[in-house]
Image (cartoon, rainbow, N blue to C red; front, top):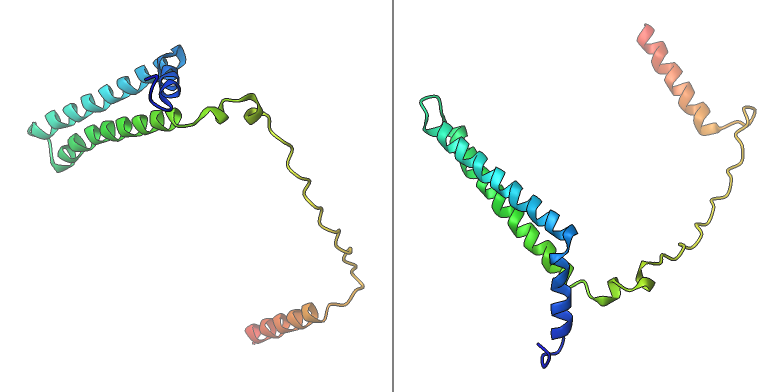
Length: 136
């Protein structure tokens, strides 16, 4: 690994998966996959029973598929963590800069009741005419 560019980096990064925090996650993923496979087996047994139907057969195929998708997602998550790069681990990357201040919207002029609004008055007159026609 020493003669390969990036070899030392690659070996260092994969060590993250052996930490206690990651072992707990590995165990959780394996346990969940085992539960999914067991649920698929249970649905298969239900499908083969006299009370079983096509729905149980579908579930018996669906649960192991969930396990496969979970394993694929876990492998992708580990790959992304490996290729995250050293800049993501630097202390400078973790310090967050304050976002620029958001410009405040100007305050709207207060609405006064004595201020006539021609559009609103026309709409209210239209509604009054409709209400009068409904009464007839």
